[in-house]
Image (cartoon, rainbow, N blue to C red):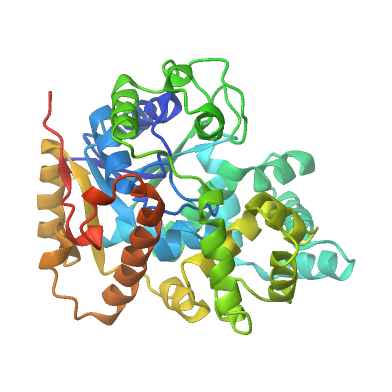
Length: 422
């Protein structure tokens, strides 16, 4: 058994993801696949279109063998924390041989060399970084220049300064570097691979071929909810699952639906919102001032935005407030190298084989039904509480048209979805 790990959001699973899955299996020569997938709130500070079990089922229907949940404390944070949580969770299973991620550069050796320098922080590199920062350069540019200087002086890579800067500022390269950094820090035996992203840019909103970005798909659903526009860009299985959900009045969820709840949360905690992660450096004052002057999420985001804070950063901050994610809890998560549990969302017969292998090789708690878990471990309780809170908040919108179907805290009622091999 050779097990490949994939770090995903599948929001939703589309043809680009299918290409990535098939090419990753080929490149890693794997026999089994595990996808660690974000739950109900995602790394860009947005809710998922559909619930985590539906998205996990779509992945297994498309060929993934086992889908496990990335704990919410990691799923909604920056590339560094997101990657640490994903790699730590996969590593805790003692069953993952490799990971494969998409990147703009498509060269894992270059990404590995850069990651190694950033982890080791050689004195020469630190001195260059200190110099460029003292010249008044912002950290990303100072780090890029310091890296290039160090790489050139030590003849480590054959790369131009402009190319290096591009590598360090491309979204999927950034994630890839953070995955590799986590592997190095954990001294993990997981081997990284990468494949070059094809055809569609990460943030492109165009649907003009069989492969488009998830951003374009979400934008299409948001603007007209016409699934027929997406029939050529997602697998048939994904299309059927989304169609079924919508026909059953489980509409796609979007961030503006949480606007009123978010405003209420901010007003209730007005004097204390800086206890939530990433709410610092005075941005709390900007947020409080803005909520009194705006009447929509888009207006709120534009009012808060500045040169210092990207739109994605602000969305993450607001999600941390919405989910009450405290600074102290993210720090605990960051310092946890062995994630105490894996939460199974969907699987097939080969997924069962992986689960048996995990039980054999690791003492990590495997959660099938949450109601059967005796939560005594404090770390496990910390992570799970946020996962449950995330689901409860999400379901306020997801079940708004199907209150007859909600039983309470749905994490306790929904079992992992088994997909029979065909």
